[in-house]
Amino acid sequence: MSAADEELYSLLVPLADERLIVPRACVAEVVRFTPPVQREAHKPWMLGSIGWNGRDLPVVAFEGAIGKDVPAPTGRTRVVVFYSTTGAVRPGFFGVLTQGFPQLVRVNQEVLKLDSTSGWPENAPILCRVKMINEFPLIPNLEKLEGMIAAEMLSAAPAAK
Image 1 (cartoon, rainbow, N blue to C red):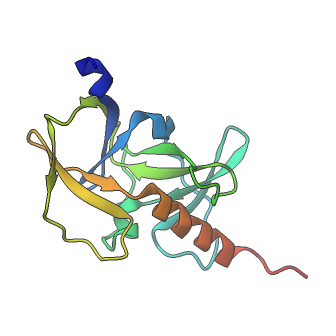
Image 2 (image 1 turned 90 degrees about the horizontal axis):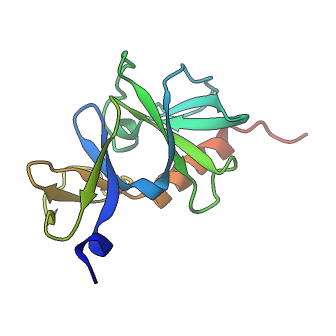
């Protein structure tokens, strides 16, 4: 097996005080930030939805989902559009607010090591933190985040009459 077969194209997604690292294949697109349409009864991390490719795309602030303050949008703010892998989020996609444009990186087992530090709530959508050269990005639990989004969307849906 060649070294190229053991590498994974990934994205370093900048947050306010952290970075996420995710496989490139999880991301459909990165789009310009537009203020989401908010609905009542959402938790602060659930920012609302934006129009994307003819769909209402739910958008979240990952910082808020892990118990931190939701950052204010800036001129560098973007929305990373993730594929829904569980099918729990109805449009098949969801967006995560990012504080800049994600950086494409290639990772392999030589540059990626587990970091045992934590610092986030037990129920946060985080699998772990890794050390990657001089970076310490978080690996998000995207399935858990999808479940959180789906639960928020369901709780905010109007009751059937």
